[in-house]
Length: 295
Image (cartoon, rainbow, N blue to C red):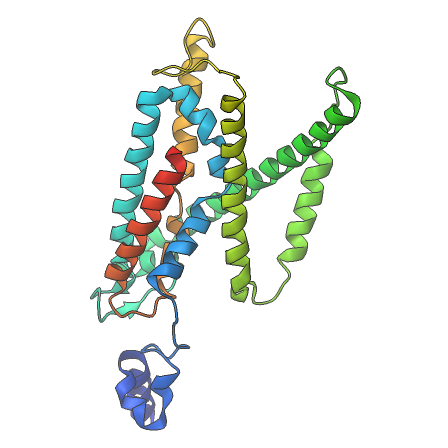
C-alpha cells in the first residue's frame, strides 16, 4: 500500500503524463500544484513593480551628490550586478538539476536546497531583518510624503511666511494602522489587480517628479550642477561629502533590490525553461528600469 502511494506521489511530482488518463495534467503542473499561467510579460511587470518603489524618489538627490559622471555610471554598474546575480538565482529555482530537479518555491527553499545547515538560519535572520528595515523605511517615507502634502497645502493657504510645522508621528501611526488592517486580508497574494495598481502608481509618482523637473527647467529656473557632484567647501564639508557619497551609493543600490521576491516570480511562470524565460524578463525589465532611472 505504501509503495503504491509513493508511486502515485512520484507521478504527480515528476510527470503529469502518468495521470493524463484522469485529466489531472490539464489543470495541474508537474508538481501537483495549480497550472501556472505566468509569462515573461507578467514577470517583467512584477519585477518593475517590485523595483520602482520609494527608492526612485531619492535617485535625483543621489545623482546630484555623485555628479553627472559617476552617477549614471553607478546606475549602470548596479544594474549589471543585479542582472548577473538574478540570473544566478534563476538557475537555483530547480535543484539539483536546473531543468528537471525539484522546485524551490521561495528564496529560503533555494538556500536550503543548495547550502543547507546553519546557512538557512542565517538566511532567515537576514530576511527578517531586511523586512523590518524595509517596513520602517516605508513607514518613514510615507509619513514624510504626507507631511509634505500637508505643508504644501498650508503654504498655498497661508503663504510661505508661515512655518507650517507638522509632526511626522501622527502620520506614521496612521500609515502603520492602515498596514495592519490590510495585512488581515486573506489570500492577499491573489489580488492580481493590486500588482497592476502598484505598477501604475509607481510610474505615476516617478512621472510627477520628472514633470516637475521639466517644468522648472522650462520656466527658466536653473540649479547649479556639476560633473563631480556637490563641491567640497562650497556646498558641503569634506566629511559631509564622504557621508553623502556613501548614502547616495546605498540609495541607488536600494533602487535595484528585488532578489527576495525573484524566486516567487519565477514560480508563477508557465514555461518549462524557467531560467531562459526569466532571463528574457530580466533583460526587458532592466532596460525599462535603466531608461526610466536615467531620465
